[in-house]
Amino acid sequence: MGGKRTAAVTGASAGIGAAIARAFGALGWSVALGARRTALLADVGRSVEAAGGRAFVRALDVTDALSIDAFFGAAETALGPIDVVVSNAGIGRPGLLHEVPIAELEREFRTNLFGPMLVARRALPAMLERRRGDLVFISSMNVVELRPFQLGYTASKAGVEAMAQVLRRDLEGTGIRTSIIRPGMTRSEFGFSWEPDILVRILDSWKEWGFLRHVDMMEADQVAFAVVAAVTAPPGVNVDVIQVNPERAPGK
Ligand SMILES: NC(=O)c1ccc[n+]([C@@H]2O[C@H](COP(=O)([O-])OP(=O)(O)OC[C@H]3O[C@@H](n4cnc5c(N)ncnc54)[C@H](OP(=O)(O)O)[C@@H]3O)[C@@H](O)[C@H]2O)c1
Image 1 (cartoon, rainbow, N blue to C red):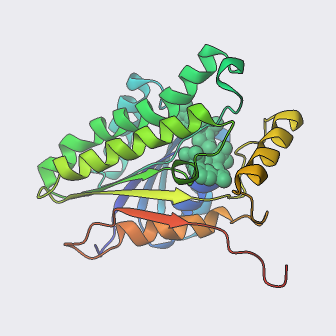
Image 2 (cartoon, rainbow, N blue to C red):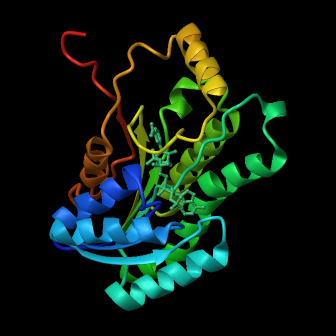
């Protein structure tokens, strides 16, 4: 869909979310950026404006329905109706099921699955009224490769994909499109807090199951291009799923 649009990106303070916001900025779009770390968010907002867009930043915790409502209300007041929503905020807590504290499993699910559900629920009525909109869900290659040691993460991403596919059917004919983006390994803050011990166990298990063919990673900007492709698809086309994976570096 052509023309200048107004987008909201969750988890826009770092990594892939920040890159998506900048990519929208480069299209000259207005972008509402949400995450918990507002100082980082303000930096990303400035980079969105430097790229040619308009930025609105506000604290957002996707595990909290009231925070989601306040974020959208403020963003609509500042930028007008929002017609592109990217549910990108996500966390991963690795470990065997019995090793991960219940509170952390719950936080993983509330961030990765219930959060995107609440965000879509908040955004939908205005989109339905205007008969246009794009809902994008950042999933993961984990849903296809079912990697060990990431049970809660993989289950929550699989849930998000199921939700997105049902939404696509429920919304068919309304003018609202639903897309899933499945990134492979991408350089970001994701996994920064993981203990070296669990990291070694994860990488060993990936090798054992054949998921670690090389260790080259994508840059976040390279994933953002896939989101832009989905939401700028021509009218009448719904980009259902895009998988984007790192190419092995030449000569390696
Ligand atoms: N990196 C990869 O290899 C990879 C691969 C496949 C899929 N993904 C997915 O890509 C998405 C982005 O990940 P990333 O790699 O860019 O990770 P990242 O650098 O750790 O960024 C995660 C973002 O999510 C935000 N966030 C976390 N909890 C939040 C909450 N409760 N409310 C609002 N925002 C929250 C963080 O901001 P605050 O901390 O400021 O709130 C941050 O902006 C995630 O859904 C992840 O699962 C990543």
